[in-house]
Image (cartoon, rainbow, N blue to C red; front, top):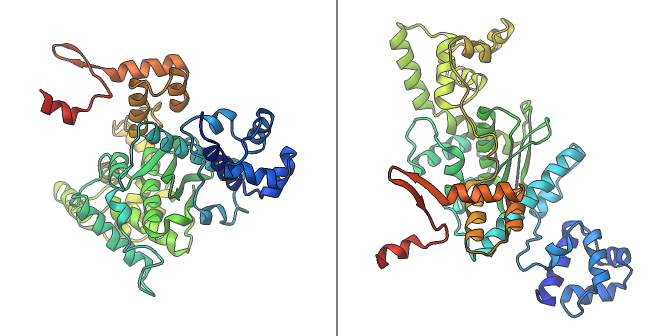
Length: 403
């Protein structure tokens, strides 16, 4: 059983997350404000009846209030206080779902007593809006940031492979693939407790999700406390943070030197002829959309301004063209929507008997049978000599010294 002090802290955090005053919550559960104050300080433990009322009013289960590892933290105050008039109820629900997933991620770390080490890019402050030199144009700052990131990550000028894994490791982003409302491409929120959480709209094409992820990386670098809800249609927003993030996405995913070199290679192969098929090939090489690639070539003055607009007017359909060329869409595991590290933490906690099968299923958002199958699939690794059973909780660093 958790201490009264920890229970009181959770009640206070959940109340603040809902922007309720002590007076409001006390009235809702039928106690005096002084009584609630005593509960939050850990000086008076709620009765069972009061716990039920508190859970109902705070939109949290009694189990979450009482279990040993529970996180009730919220996004940064600046994100919560941002104007919401443009957000629908569906968008607000998606934001709350991302917060809940972020809390579960932190809970898994606590269950395993993992102290998350800050990722390298978390310490980068050079591009934060609050510290940028006055008057620094956001496009120039984004171009510099993209060049820095590529040098830091040793990417050269080629395409960025395994983008999600790379940013999970280097930036500490907690990336979830969620079925967001159609008007939203991605959501980014941050707090000291939750870290940086990103939701990508899994209903969109892979190329768009990659772009959205780097866009949110821009907000992470520039002003993480403000967060972001990225519309599906950008429509040339003039906010400096949006300009910075969009420019970063273009410069990071399609570096000028690499794009120019690749363009020249196509010209050499085709005798100075560059076709729509070459455009599609370049877009697939950099894993960006046909539109993004064409507009990037226009920006670099490798194609005439207005090329994309003319192709649209001629009713050119990139997906139909790819089928005609015999190109298949990139294969994806449609079932995988949780971060790989999140899944590993949950399975390791279960292997160490720190989670029950039901709790594992809850963290993996599936039924118990599926959770058990996932555990067994990770536990057994097929090898040429047969099946090798792995202990997911074994400390392999120390094991090599013992052998």
